[in-house]
Length: 504
Image 1 (cartoon, helix red, strand yellow):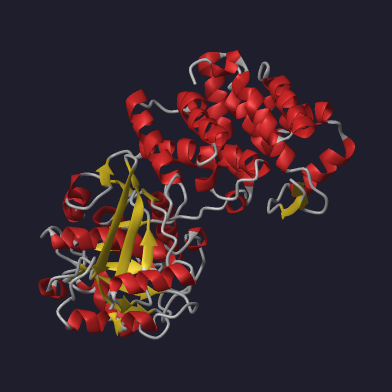
Image 2 (tube, one colour; image 1 turned 135 degrees about the vertical axis):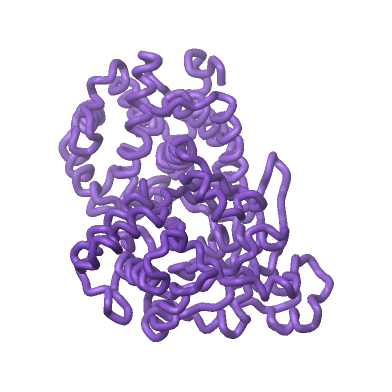
C-alpha cells in the first residue's frame, strides 16, 4: 500500500479524501505552535487548513516539539501531512469526511533546534503563537530564559517574545496574538501573568516589559472537540484500506468543533481564519461557551457515570441506546442542569447546545468509557455540578430530582474497600482522591446516616449541601432504592412517579 506522501505525489488518487492543492505548500509561516498532540492536529491545525483552502488566513504552522516523549519523525517522513477522519452525528444525521491537512510546514525539536525556533521568532511573517502543553505546562518555573532551551513552556514563550523584541527593536506592530488551548480557566490570563513574572525575575528591563504588556495579546480560549487520535488496530487497518494509503499520523475527530477565543477587533483581524473555519468564535467574552460546556456536557457526564455504570452500560453511546438511561441523560441536562446554570443563558441557545451534546453522545464512532469519565469524580462534581445545584435552588426552591438521583448513584458508586467497588457482580477500580473518605463513611454509617454526613462535608463541596430543603431526603430515598432494588428497577420506578414524569 502507498504511503500518504507517495499517494500525493501520484496526483492524489481518486477516493474519499480531500487533498491539498499545491499552492497550500507555498504559504508563509504565520503560526508558531508548542505541542504536537492530537487535539492541536484535530482542532486548530485542522481549522487553519480549512481556512487556507478557502483563501482565508493563508498561513502555515511551525510546530515546536517541546518534550522528549513521543516520536516526531513521522512528520518528516510524511512531509508534515496527516489525515483527519471526521466521524460523527449532526442533527441526527451521520457525518463522514477525510481531509489531508497541509497546515504544518515543519516540526522543530526544542531540545536540538532551539536556535531555529528563535529564528522563527524573528520572522516578519509570524503573527500567532498557539500551545497545548497540558494543564501542567502553564506553571511558573524560575529559570534563565537564555538557556537553550528554557525548561518550561512559559520560559520558552518568554524567550521567543524577547528574541522578537530585540529583532524588531521593540516595534509595537510586531507583537503577537498568543492563543493557549490548555484546558484551564482563563488560560490566556494565567499564562500572561506567569510570563510577566518570569520577565521581572530575569530582569529583562522596563522597555521590554512594557512591549510585552502592550504589543502582545494573550487570549483566553475554550476548545471542545473529541479527538481520540488513531483508532484501534482493526479500525485503523480498515481506514487505511478505505483511504488507499498508510498514514502514521492519522487522526480521528468527531464532527462537532468549538474553538472559542476571547479577543477584540485586532485579534479578529489577525486570526482571520475564524471567518472560514467551522466552530471558531471570537468574542470579547466567552463565558457563555465555557458555562454551557462545563454545566451541560461535563456536568451531565459527572452526574450520569455512576448510574450508567450501575445499569451495566460501559460507554456513553451504549447508554443512549438504553431507553431509560437515554431519557435520564436528556432530562437531567435540559430539565435540571440548564435552568441551574449560574449565568444568563437564552433558553433556545441552551436547548440547541444540549441537543448537540446528545448528538455527540450518540456518536457511533467514539467509545467514550464511563469509568474514564469517573476519574476524580468527586472534584468534578464540586466544580461542575454544585454551583448548578445551588443556583437551581435559588431559582426554583425545589429539589432537582434528576440531580438527586445522579448524586445518589454517585454515593453508591463510591462504596468501596481499598479503592475497589463492586456492581452487578463485577469489581471496578475507583480512581478518586476521596475514595478512602467514602470507604470509611460506608464502613461506619447506614445509608440514612451517610447521605447527610456526606452532604454536610463543606470540605468536599465548598458548601453544606445538607441545608438544601428536601435534597438529603430525596438522595437518601434514591440511594436506598439503588441498594435494595438495583439501578434498573430504581430508574423504572423513577419515571413511573407522576411528580417526576411531569414535563419529561
